[in-house]
Image 1 (spheres, each protein chain N blue to C red):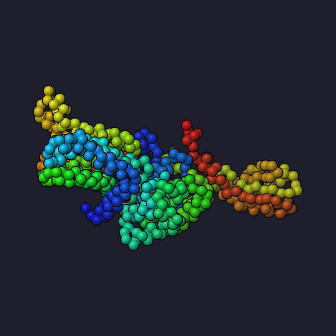
Image 2: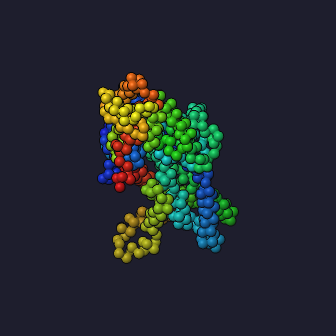
Image 3: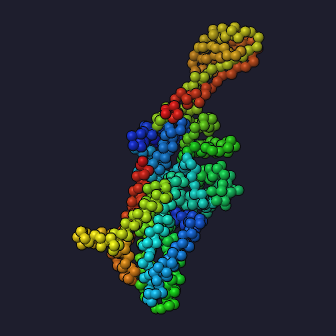
Length: 249
Length: 313
C-alpha cells in the first residue's frame, strides 16, 4: 500500500470515528452492548453456577448479540452517505473507491473493537475468582473480533444497496442469521433426516458458529481465521461492485 | 481544459443526456441552462466522474475521466447540487478533511483552509457544526470545499440555488473572478445569471444541446432582438408610424399605446435601425421622449427552445 492510499484511509477513518463519537449513537451502543453482555454472561449464561474459571458463558452469546448490534452500527455506513448526498462528494475526490470502503469499514471495526475491549471487567472478575486459561480467553476475544468484522462487512454490503438505513439493517440481520443458522445444531439435526453428511458439512462450513467454536475452545486455527477474512474480503469487494453498479444506473 | 465528445447517458430506455459535445478553455465561464430535468446535473455528474458515461469521452486537462480518473479529479473542484456536507462536522473540521483527501498536509493544508475561509466569508462560523448553520452558510461551506486545492477546473451545480439576493450577488462575483484564470462550468435555471457571470451559455433540453453561444448571441435569437421603441411628443402616432415604415432598415412597425415599435430587417442591426430613427426624428423635428433598442430576452429564447416538464406531461 502506498502512502497516499494510507493518508486517504486515515483521513476517512478518522472522520468516521469522529462522527461516531460526536453523536449519541456510539454511547448508546456501548452502554447497551455492555449491559447485554453482562446480562447474558451472568444471568442467562449462569456464570457463577457453572463453577468454571472460564468465559464460555460470555463468548457463547456473541454471535447472537452481534446479530442485532453490528448491523445497527454498520447500517449507516453507505446508506447515510447516499441519503445525505455526501457519496457524490466523496467519490468525486481524487481517491480510489476501495480506499473509502476500507476506511469506513476499519473505522467501524475499530469502534466494535473498543466496545469489546470495554468488557475487560469480566476478564478481571474471572481472574480474581479463579485461575482461568488466559490464552483461551485471548483466543475467544480474537474470534469475537473477527466475527464482528464479518458481520460488519456484510452490513457494509447491504448498506451500499440502499439509502434507507432500516432496509439495510433488516437485510443484514437476515444474512447474518443465515450465517449462524447454517451450523446451528437444531438446523443441522433437521437436515440429517434427508441430506447426506457431506452436504451437511458443506452447509455447516459456511456457518460462523462452526468457525467461532474453535476460538472459544482456545484454538486459533488458520482455517477459521481464513474463513472470517474471506467473508470480510468478499463482502467488501461486493460493496465496491454495488457502489459502482448503483452509479451506473 | 474540458473536452466533451458525444457524451451520452441512458437510464434504462430513457436517454437523459444525448450526444453533448463541447469544450471549455481556461478563462471561460460556461453557463449550463435548461429546464428542470433537462440533464444538467447528470451531465455534470459524468464530467466529475461520479457517474460513468454510457457513451462518449470526457477529458479534463487531457486526462480521460474513465481511464485516468484520479489525475482528472485532482484538477477539478466540484460543488454538487445539494451542496452536501457532513452535518455533524464543524466547518473547520470538514474543510481540513477535504484538504487531506486532496492531498494537502501540514502548513499547506492550514493555509488552504485559511484562504477559502476568507474567500467564502466563513470566519464567524468556523467552529460551528454544519447542521446548525443557515442554508447560505452551508452552501458557502461546500463552495469553500470545492476551491480548497485551487483547482484549474471548477464544476458547480446550481451554485446560487437557495441563496438570498446578496449571497447570489457574492457568488456570481466569485464565479466571474474564478473564470478569469480557470475553466468554469456552472448550471442554473436563473437566466439573469447568464448575463451576470457567463462568457458563454449553453441551453440544453431533454438531454440535447439546443443553443450554444455568447449571452449576446443567444439573446439575438429572440423575437424582440433589435427592436426599437420610439415615443415622440407632438405628431399623431399614426403619422409617426407611417414615417417609420418608409425606412429601409425597418421590417414591421406597430403602434403600442402611444409608442411606435419598429422591428429591424436584420436582427443584429438594431443599432443601425436606432440610428436611422434618430436621423428621421431630427429631419421631422420630432421631440423624442423615448428611444431604446432591445437586446432581446433570454427567457424568450429559453421558452422557444425548451419544453418544460409540466408541458411535456
